[in-house]
Image (cartoon, rainbow, N blue to C red; front, side, top):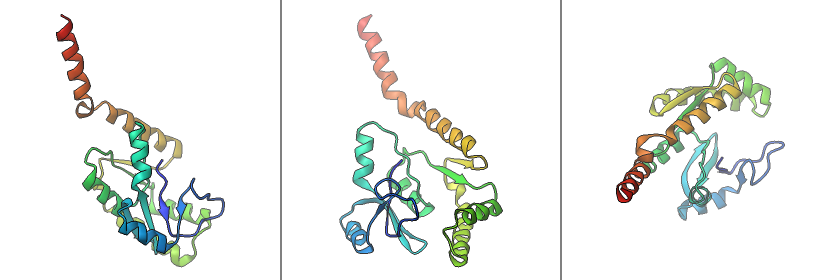
Length: 174
């Protein structure tokens, strides 16, 4: 998982550098000017961004990198990373989404309505993604995401060079 940077305050039990990189708005804006983000957006009155260096370091190590970002950020990343796999995670219903947010207990009524309004708007963009996973059961949804990632690793476009190399080696040794 990539770790996003944010200007919001940590929630109880969130750890800087594990859940998010928590920074001031001034620091965040400076990093925007320096081109430090793959994407960034202002969501729910706070900035969130994906640190370019953090992601590139993981990719250079050959690791898969999962970005947990909103639709604004995903649109920006999609423009620059056409080979990415884009999965929209949807709640089973808006009612269930409200229940989950209420159970978390971190939003006041005004924030709750803002989040639900944004979620509704985001749902209208689900068709922009390659896949949609309905998060009705966390374990099932996680399994579906894992299956999508594994299947994508076998796509012809991703393996064509390896297959061409195998064909070349066979030809040379005959």
